[in-house]
Image 1 (cartoon, one colour):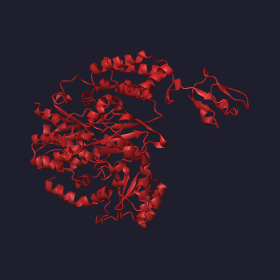
Image 2 (cartoon, one colour; image 1 turned 90 degrees about the horizontal axis):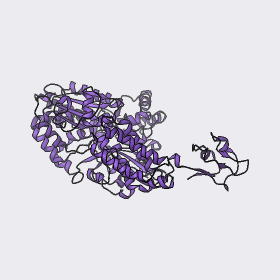
Image 3 (cartoon, one colour; image 1 turned 180 degrees about the vertical axis):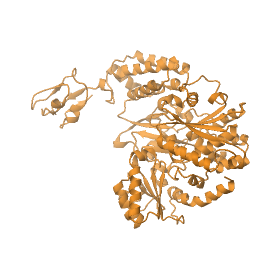
Image 4 (cartoon, rainbow, N blue to C red; image 1 turned 180 degrees about the horizontal axis):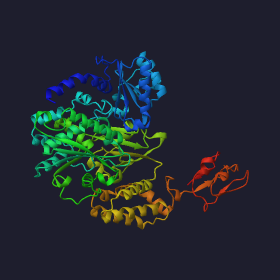
Length: 630
């Protein structure tokens, strides 16, 4: 592949893809000369696939043939559009008609009425993309997309991730051509340092500085690694990038190889990501076939290749030294640092390791320049950040926002607010290593330093929204249960410490806690933070400490009052019958599995608290609202 051949492919394919991008971003109505009357993009990411997008695509192909227009309509299976709660998603261009929660039955109408006859089926559209007068608005005008700025996700939901030509049409491999043709390794490092890009995998270490350390390390053999093993509960940012734009990771890793002097790269990805693994392998094969991997890339004399290594799902393998140990074929356990991987990493050689989202930013920084990237974000946190928003939020999905966007903007505007009229209580960020940000700080600009100051952290980008019905002690216990299961057990402070912390929380949520336990938790957390071998143990107390800091009244209620204010912890719940409201229908007693409800017909019943197992069937079956919990 030469630069001339690269630009020829770009010219041939860019109009096909720009129709989708410009309509989505600017609402431009474009006359297309691509050879197709319309293009239909269906989300093929994991979220929409689990909602039935494959059946939608099969129904679409069948209906197009039956209506005799299959040669006129291009069907593209893309990556994630972001609005996961609305899947399966189908968008028709050049109109930009956004059909949500598509079904095979609905597809038949869309093909006949819209694709064949030209009449948009408005009742099947995502309601936020339709003006009051019935006209279609661009996705960028909806609240979900309005404040987003897609850099790492720029091609997700836009291109066919299994067609390298579509990636090339969107300036793909232009950054690699620029680096190999006009830049020295020091130029690349300088550009990254001036951009302010920090690692998006959790710690936020400056990327340019990491690469400079690896370049300066002596050794004929070096490696480039990509961490695609995101294990935080609720996180799916890296998976979505690999499913929607895998070529950008290949391009960035190749740039990293040139910069530090490495000729081999490994992508460590969890086996539970079958779609991402499949698309990444297709992308690697296509990149090799086009000469972007292998020998003498773009006639530069530089050689580089990439292999995939599958992880078994161990959370600890998200830690860099444990990940490299696993690639080497050993049990994934962390190693003491220093020496750091930039000096002694994979197979004992100097290694650069970044996560997927970090790499996804690099081609655009090379092409657009460090000033462009540094113009976004805050003083210490440049660029954008991708978050996977889940929990008690209307718009569950994937968002990319400029650093410095407030939590309120994410929750109330982009996220669409809390469902069912409930109040926002907290946002949990950083996964098991992070903490909870209470409603008191909802106007905090989100960046690395602000989150740490609040007792949380950025992490890889999981953000779980919690409402007023959430028990914060139970949330802390949930994350401790996770870290207990995921601790590799190599160091005592983590192996024993996490289990001991969990025992304290189990004691508190079962109504047996003592005030002194809170002091013991803080003391134990301090020991774990200073003596654990890796970040898993060092940060495991964070969910507990942050909830104790902001919601100590809930801990006190569990301990002193033996009640769970949110009514979540079963051991502290009591089911009571209101005598004046009870009609004596006996429905509750007949459904009680342990015979804990006594009473006669047409007389108020009573719950025997010693027998009650708090299953909730009495509450569920009562037709007169006579049973309540306290």
